[in-house]
Amino acid sequence: MAQRGISILKGIEAQTVIDLLNKAYCDEWLAYYQYFSEARVIKGLMKDAVVAELNLHGADELRHATLISNRIIQLGGTPILHPSQWLTHSNCGYDAPTNFDVRAILEQAVKGEQCAISTYSSLAEQLRDKDIVTYDLVSQILADEVEHEEDLQSLFDDIDDFIAQFKA
Ligand code: FE
Ligand code: FE
Ligand code: MG
Image 1 (cartoon, rainbow, N blue to C red):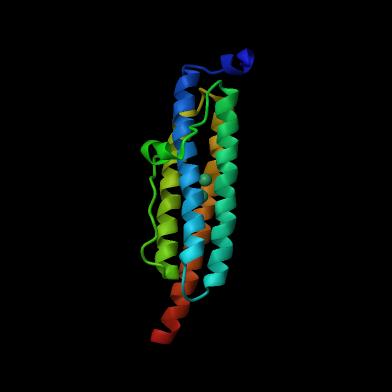
Image 2: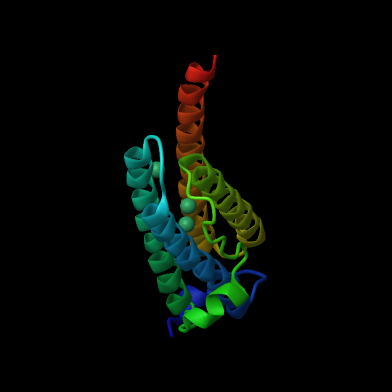
C-alpha cells in the first residue's frame, strides 16, 4: 500500500473515503445498467437521437466506475465485488423502466442524474480540504453528471416543444 499517498489525508480516515467511494461505485454500475436497459426498451418520437445520448452516458458511467475503483485500490481498499451488493450500498438505487415512451424514459434518466449530482456534490463537500485527490476526482465526475442532466433535459424539452406544435 502506498504510504505517502495515504498520509496526505487530513482529518479523515482512508477507510471512510473507501466506504464513501464504494457507495458511489455501486451507483455508477446501476446507472450504467439503467442506461443500458433504457436504450433497449425505448419507443417513440426521436428515439434514435435519444438512444445515442443514452449510450454515450452509459459509457461515461462505466468510465466513472473505473475511475472510482482505481481510487479505492489506491487507498488500500477493495471495490465491492458482488453485484448483489450494488442495490444495498448505492445512494440512488435502481429505477427499472416501466413506461417505455421517450419522454418517460428521459424524465426517469433526468431524475437519476439529479440524484448523482446530489451525491457527488455532498461527497465533494465531505472531502474538501481532507482528501485533495478524491476531491478532484469527484469534482470531475460531478461536472459530467451536471452535463448529463442538461443533455437529457434539453432533449426532453425539444421533443416536448415538437409535440406541442401539433397540439396548438
Ligand atoms: Fe456517473
Ligand atoms: Fe450520469
Ligand atoms: Mg451527453
